[in-house]
Length: 547
View 1 (cartoon, one colour):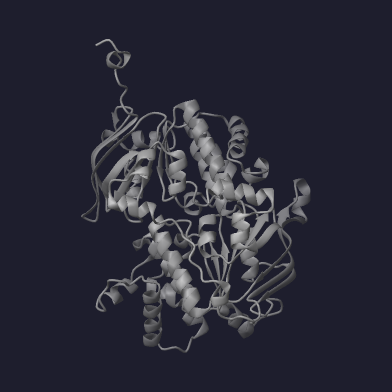
View 2 (tube, rainbow, N blue to C red):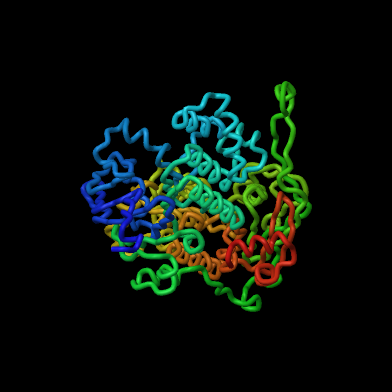
């Protein structure tokens, strides 16, 4: 043997998983999978909702205490299954860091962002309070959050969805881990910030030899970032290999199905749309929205200042159409949605279905609220964990039709669930048992269908969709988009679509408005804005999205 390759020993993988099996309640969900991850390598695990991606990631460090985990998981040669709880706790957040899928539930609502990052630095890096405080600001700035001092003092509910996602990434990277497990780390980020986060992770990978295990449904992210891909279905690995080879020539039909599930534009021409000549569903003129904020120093004890979030925008949504509102995180998209829903005070003119929220009380307010419904970004946090499926979907009927008999209300609930395809494949005898299930017993795609059914059951005319598919894998995303388009055609619904995913906008929107820092920088027909943008900012967003 004369070559250098045959004389030097091959270093062992940083993470080596063999015959991993995970069971919950006596049912095996992950069936003996094998994979490895080298230092500095980026491995993506993809698959449909319910394929076992997240369970696999959580089981590596025994983060599912109720689960039975067998097989071998070795980190730097150490068998993790042989470690006791203190040993595992030393690894969690230190040598191995997690970015969880749902930032609102992963962040502590009682602590500021600065306190939560400082806790990581003090526990795993041994920094003092003053040292940790300085590093906190560096970490916040590194993930692109503006005004690090203000963000360090903010609580999770005071941050946007994308800002909370970046806060989780800042916490995870604070300990300079060897392995980062990221479960959907960029779902709440716009395309520009997604590239920024990938660049940050790549810089950490090169500097620290950081290995990254990404759980994602974002195939564009996988193609741009990962070295290798592992495709899972029903708890099994169906295919794995290098990114370029797998995308160019997948060997399994299931992998080809995933690659073919990206959103496609299939909208009827304007001439085929109904409601021509009807009044607009939404009219916005010179809209301004401000949030109260505490003043610095002793003045904050006596009075509050204001932060202008929406600054004088004009929009119009015709009936039966979809208006897509896009922009980077913190641009004011969700604030606009809350104002349209009548949940925030505003200045300027805002007319919903020909009526204003101003001065409405009692029955008049309830009647308008019935006509305007919302599907929130995170169905897990927007659905009450204490209510059953029947109670969640039927809640609107209890408010708006209190005299409706219980049997009739249940029939309406079942009709709504059938309409969104949640009961497909169930026999009539099985349907009542499903009505008694709770949100945690459903997958992400099923929870989103529940949220849509809850909005539809009161027969609205305008639905605000706040990132309706951000947490869904590509196949389920395609199903939900097809469902929303079918409902729009059949019911003549108008949609205000708030999203950072330009592929979803391309598939659904007739008109597009681009926001930046609360200002409207561009608007027009979707094909015009997304194909030939006029402004540099819109051009940057579209190029970053890979549309």
